Image 1 (cartoon, rainbow, N blue to C red):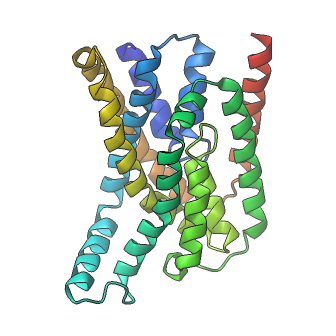
Image 2: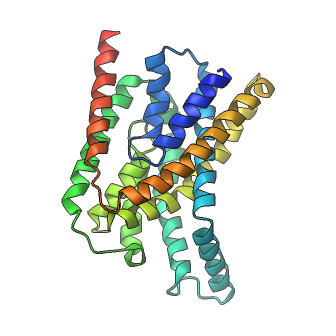
Length: 273
């Protein structure tokens, strides 16, 4: 992998991690469309590590929210009342929502890694993302906000997040759709989606370190990873800010059309090329 490829893929990751169009799909399809032959032992660790860049973007963007959540959780634990009503409740709901994806990710790790090598599978899952986004719009007349989210809502959104471990199913698209299906406003569903990205993306980043340590040319690969991480962080931060503003008054249908078109192109090219 070259520095230029790392920059391009970092930009792709930063843009598509938070826009509901599946960053994993783009990390599979962009090299495929451009004819890049990246060593397979570098693909999965790099893909996960550029997600660390977007994880840092979430942490920095929501630093005040995360600080208040963590502070409230520690305080409630110290008082022996971990589930009392307040900001700390949101923290426990985020943890609850992270469990399904964590379990599925561990159980299906090898299967997921293999699916990252298949443009056809990625294209089919992109069609699934398009369906999720269109379906979510049937719940657009919603009145519930972030503070109205409960345990059942959180668990359901967590289950939709578990779907996104496969390339082509957008994590943000699935979780925002999951929130909207529980009659949560688009913007509030997006904020919860971004906040719940922190634990699952952090866990994925830690697991990827084990893969990196097994690389024979790790020292040569470090500059490339660093460039990808920094690029995805900067672009990801801007993408979060833009999407939260967009969702206040716009639907998910344009993203659904994009996912459907990209998925169809990937499927067709798989049989043509």
